[in-house]
Amino acid sequence: MGTEEITTILSLALSGVIVYTYSSLRNAQRIKSRFNMFAVRDNLVLLVAKGHLQEDSPVFDYFYQRINRILSDNKPMGYHDLLLAVAYIKTDRSNLRKAIAESFQQSQKILAMEEAKTPETKKVIDAYYAGVSKILLAHSNFLRFAYLASKLITVSVVKRFLRAVVSRDIDAGLVIIRHSKKASHQLDANLHTA
Image (cartoon, rainbow, N blue to C red; front, side, top):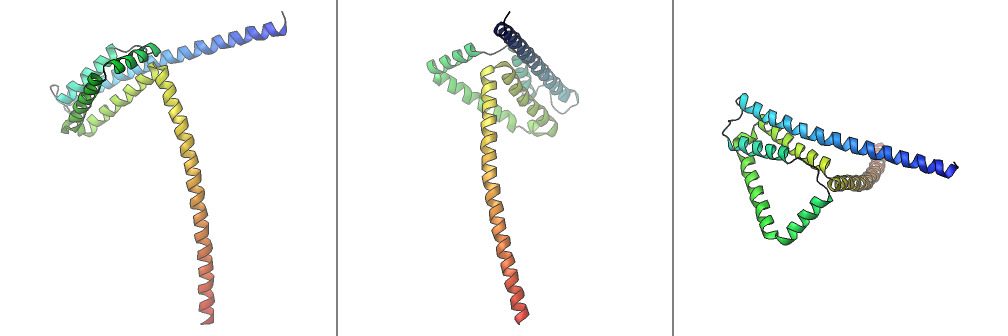
């Protein structure tokens, strides 16, 4: 066997290890995100058990139903699912927009209720939304890529902005210091001559 064959075999083996590791990590993230939602549901039920929330409350019902639906539909979302969603949007935009608007109104109505504003309930609601985000990122390569790309772009833009602002502010501060020193020297000179 020559050097090229050995290099090719090692490259293929390394690629296999990388793919296996990546898929194992993704599977672990999916499982972790799923169990995170179980914990959120348990904490929601605990709010009822501790008396912070009523079992027949619209807040409890809204989030409990959504968590159960998420847990029952928790499956990987791939490009096929994305294409189906895009096709659905193109064929039936009015119904989708209406459904999104209704869902948004319902969630705003629930979040505006006094029960949803207690610190204990807010903590569980925040955990719910964080859990949904983790599930989406763990199950969709496209969303994960978009999220990471947006973070990288945002970080680089913010860094450039901060560099520009900080250096501009430092320059402005140095100018002020120079002017202060000059004014101080002039004041000292005026005091000595007077």
